[in-house]
Image 1: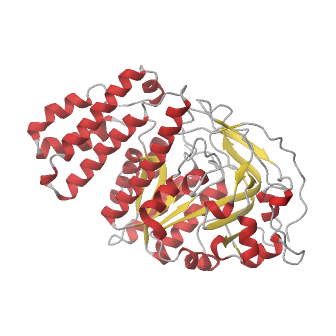
Image 2: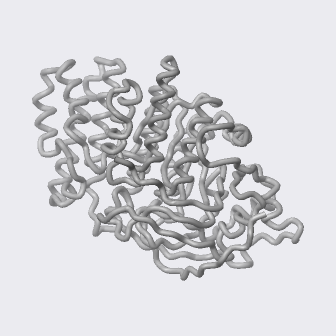
Image 3: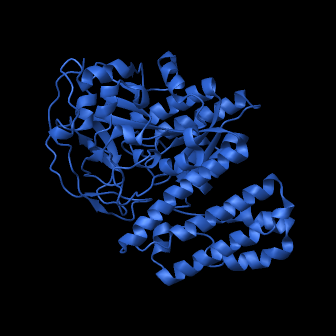
Length: 453
């Protein structure tokens, strides 16, 4: 049984949530569940006892070795073709290693073949090129494509290396890596070449016009420098990027797989240019384009699934993979909600909670370095406080099939800690059963490991 843990008090204040590279913040007030909102149950049928009946213990969070403890998770996932696996912080070792552990299990036991990350579409293609060809070095690829992100860590080198090793052993059924996000923080010239090179080869007469449309946009080396351009200029560049997409799409008659990928790459340029029309000082613009970003991530996942037939594990923050977020003013509709609209029961979200430990975040969302922060045990009234009293150090449960009274408890919104690009971050209200189909709870986490030279 979990031992007694020291309390820390957290005042209810306005909290800041960063988007993309942490360029923008928006405050949201926290409202805790009151006693009369909690379902009345007898002592014997209290939430801890009932949650314990539904819980399955985790043997380990590190990848490798026996995965018998994940068999029940396989059954819970069932026939879902896309599984969203969240994280309650962007920089904790156990969340990252559990993602590799779960992905390996799904590859080996459930036929999954793509790992999708909340990373730019263009960077994902670079990682996947390495996985398929073996050209280059996993550590160098990770350092280049994950630079300045919370995933620039040893845990993701481990994942990439395992995926490459798997492909060497399974050339007839390779695994893939995709980035499902917009092109922040950069879209390099090599990525634009994936579009212009196709047009040059297949429709050379259209190349001058395409190059004209991409002038001033190609390349985007630095998102922050790009955002410093006047808004009117960025809006005009977004119009041109959309026209470039339409130019490429207009040659659909050429058909074939190469066309599909060229069109999708042109679509990524247009998506990124549109997102970069955001006005950080305009809340309505901010909220609209954050919603657009989550919609883009969902569309990119479903495009990949449709064109490859792969089963996909989607890795992102809890606030992206869940059906609803803890910050509805900023994340008015999540990637998980869009995926449910597009895929129905073929999409299944898995959320993470944790009791205590350390993680990586930043003092300021705009710029700054990722650094270690630590939080102690949660105070009573938070979801994690009750979850950590379950008699397993680490465990998971099927929210949908928990005992009725446990589901009622899981349906009540309570303060829960989800940490993004900036810390301090205050707990926000979340009803677990309304956000996730499966929940994984970890007793203690530590910061992810810095990438070695």
